[in-house]
Length: 417
Image (cartoon, rainbow, N blue to C red; front, side, top):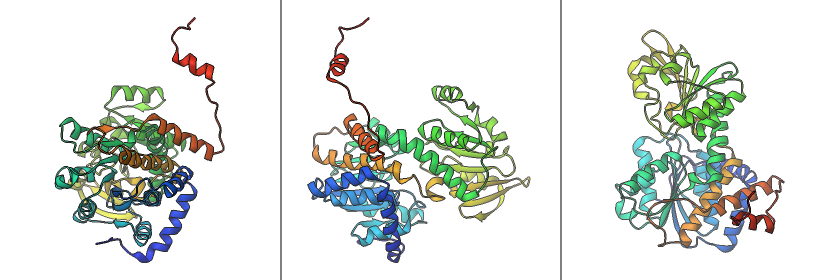
């Protein structure tokens, strides 16, 4: 099968959306132009499991311009933009993705990508990597290398490495500075608030917003919520991050206490059972539950179903749960990534840097085929600096550079007081 999408009739609309993203992704445009000329990926088959958005389409087009044959599936059942998937399909990409996939359909799509026997794999959340290390081991053992986009996926891959089971080297794109400092913080911060507002249209000013987790994603969400007038509470299990949150001016407490006072809860931990029945039972009537982590395990939907007497959809991407004492809790996006289910995901400008890292990572793996260790690796710092410089130049910003005297000084130890 060449592809499977919802409706190829949506392709023209999808092309317009991709054009919009292209105008806002100058660094990736530059790489695409370079790849078009040099064809560094000629003869390479790339298998990707990513959120199928207009920004992802720009990455896929860049790889294709470089000579790659690309097979693509969605990394979340509800994040695919059907018009974009259609546009990619009619352009020759082997795409298997549509919004609203069932669990079996989701894994069937990933299986199509795996069965293409890719040379290099790109992933967002590590479901493709996990498949290749379990059901597709025979295929996985032939993979030259892979990449991983998210914190959650990197954690899973490091667990594989720790057990000595990693079949091929993986570039942790999430660990690149021009990824996590911008994508995780500013991208997720803005798009999560965007998703909550599109779903609910509530006023954030004056609300108590509880953010679970103070990693780069949590920081971005907290920053944006406070910027819109919310009173922000942070919950954490890491004492260093909790201390940072305190000194950044946030109130920090345990979730058991925050559950009693929060109006909106946003999970951003990458872990499971962050909000459970214990917390739901003491929440205010009308509390809103949203998740910004990759998988739908942070808010225990099973617990919410168990303690509720009824539920109904009340708005797009909003489900009302009625508890036994007639309190109502509102779950957004079925507990999945609220920024991609209820909104469009990260703005193109920030994905410009993330996907530039992905493009360079694929080229890096191809050029070093057979020489990389089977470990979770990072891209060289020089790539971060190149991407950052191109981004600054696209914004009309120039910066200073070190003089030869300054460079020598930084390489020496003799000069002191």
